[in-house]
Image (cartoon, rainbow, N blue to C red; front, side):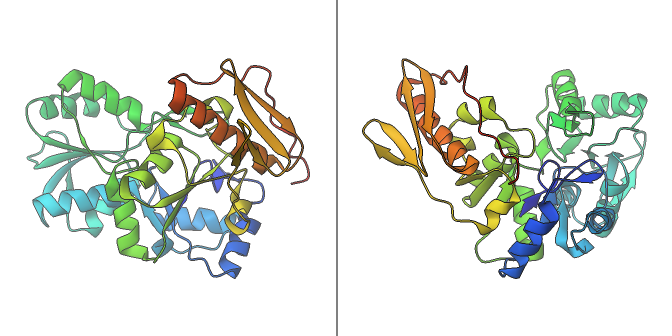
Length: 319
């Protein structure tokens, strides 16, 4: 189960190597599903974009937080329920697909659903927020604080959710990662005997996998860097770590604890007076695995995040 933003693509461009790595994974017999917390585009549009980037996909291969939100609404309200829509095409199509009726902010309604939509008028947000405060049930597609763009991380739907939450004092029912509904919806739609969540965000992709009890692979092509990785709390730690999607088809060795340090593939990581040190030589993937395990072990023992000042990841040119 592959997250999209920061894993397969960033904006209009594929992550370097992603099409080839996914083709290799499929050649080895892996089934592939593409899942995203971004509720703005319908699955067909996402699949078309993937195809343009050299990653063959159909609408049935894509599951969005909009579809998960529609599933949550349907389960509680049933077909024909009227839902105030704060979002764009992807969320509107997901409601229609499940037999729900999208209505405006002034119309009679059974619930409000919100999703990422840069063109949603502020006036509609204000009116919906008042109705939520006054008791209308609210489902949020996701709570991502940021969204990757070609010009860097930008405010995500979570910023809007936080604003409405603070105004209303209401906690929404959340459909996207790290909540269960999106991952459960993916398994329901796509199947798979041994699901693996692949993502770039610790607090959504990896925490979501932990919440549903499945393995996860963190790739370092999106928002997670050294500072975020070493500070990961227990519920955000992946089963596996790799630089990019090549890790799907490569062995995933675990560092071993030897003489007070963590050793893997020529690297040794240790923590001295709170500072993380890594010595040796080897693959960049193994360096990151040593860093992760050494840092997490120290965090669990001391309660403090290790100091990584002066620690520079190895060069990955030519990978």
